[in-house]
Length: 270
Ligand code: ATR
Image (tube, rainbow, N blue to C red; front, side, top):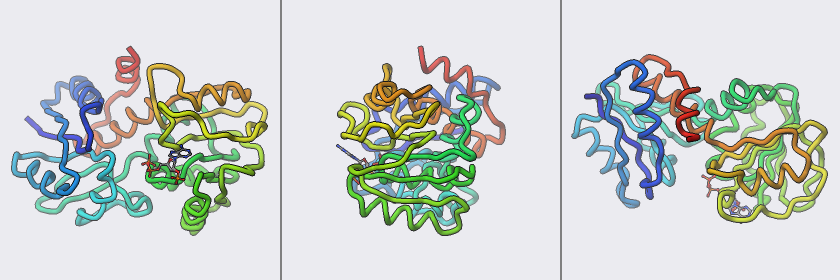
């Protein structure tokens, strides 16, 4: 049996085992995927323990993605850009890392939802680790521009400057107040999103036909999705599709075949 896990703290709520077991079942792949709560002070110890148990790889979630990046002997270019790793696997004794979050977001938006990114004006709310993880793949889709707006304006400006390097699209940083312009695609990565209220945003940010994506997911429309609907969004989506797609990307890396995400998405919605 091939052993994998997700590391997080807390991790009890994670739905990754359900997703990966459903993927494996599609081809009768013999795979066990556990939840492992890593101690806040000893992520490396938890990774070593997985290896000692014969583990082949792992996913990494909050708050360990940056530590996972540091621990790797080699990382992909997109993980390097993000400074964070959500997928680990060993090659001999070398620990490798990738970040599949951005690819998961882009695949869900483009393929599953059928929303265009190329040529669109994109607004990203938030400037934390989640945003850092997806900016590279998002910019690779050639949006007209990306504006990153964050409560702490300086963080948005620093992040924008970093990703402006080597990008064909302008990347701009700003605060949440005095936010101006009109956008075709709004992506929410403010982590208060699930339970908390939306921060106050000016009216009129959504252009005609604009769509809104929340990286958070829930059993009902999130506060951000409700805000976007009130602002006239043509369509809204939560982040369940991103979760399943980033998992599929990791699974393909580990197992060498790509699972079908549509039935797993449907299962997760039930
Ligand atoms: P994540 O991994 O989810 O990105 P994070 O790195 O802690 O977590 O980032 C949290 C993001 O949510 C930040 O952009 C944060 O804004 P600040 O940089 O100003 O802290 C944003 N955030 C959290 N709570 C918020 C709130 N109540 N209002 C506005 N933004 C909030």
